Length: 289
Image (cartoon, rainbow, N blue to C red; front, side, top):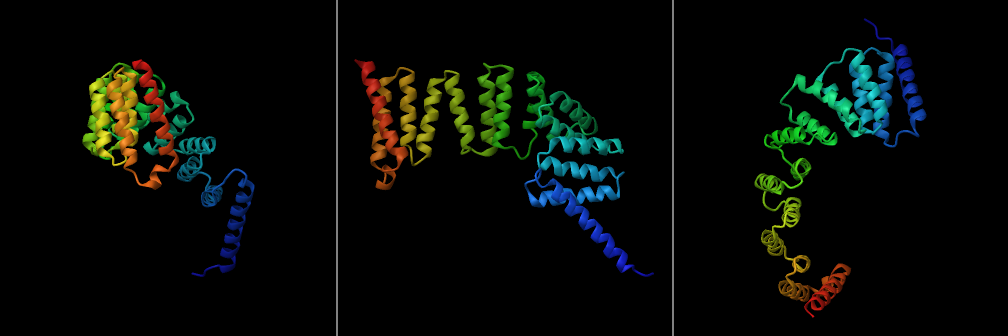
């Protein structure tokens, strides 16, 4: 068997020229060189094997990564027309429709995915997100509840999204939202700051003043730089008409500032905080008089 070196060289030269041509024509459209080159190479591969459904799917993924969503969908549908019926294709089509706010189309595609794999958590989560955008809050909540209690790699943003759905379904259900926050803290640890902050918000919004004050105390005790938290607590106390306690918290904020190193005292956020403390003290004194 002989190897045609000349023919191989001509083939590679032709292939390289096609890649370069595509790349140069697409330069205004693509910003990332590596990704652009991969799309160009995939385009050449498609030109050599135009009925290969996998190649269209793979190029669609590249387009999607580069946020060329129309091109991605075009490739996904072409892959589908060539016989690709994998669940991965349904998921990517659903995801692109979701990103581009074509929620009905997204819902149809993710339903096709779940027909093939009804327990997949990523797909069930996407379905819940789509239903939320369609304001089908009860169904969204049911789906996301299943996801949140079966995820092994739960993230703070998952818990916060779950809470948003809970309150969208019933804007007075702070009990459910706080239970979700506590579940997240149990899973992720008590020092998950985004969840602790949201817990404080929910306690305040639901009028649970004593628990909200306990939450302020959590932040004061948790952080060495607590002058800001003393001020925030004082501001909240003033809002709920407890001026004496607010005044005490402001004095503690001032003490905390005085204990800082000079370099911290001279930083603009601390200087601004001093002014805020003076302003709030003045407002409290005016309320008393």
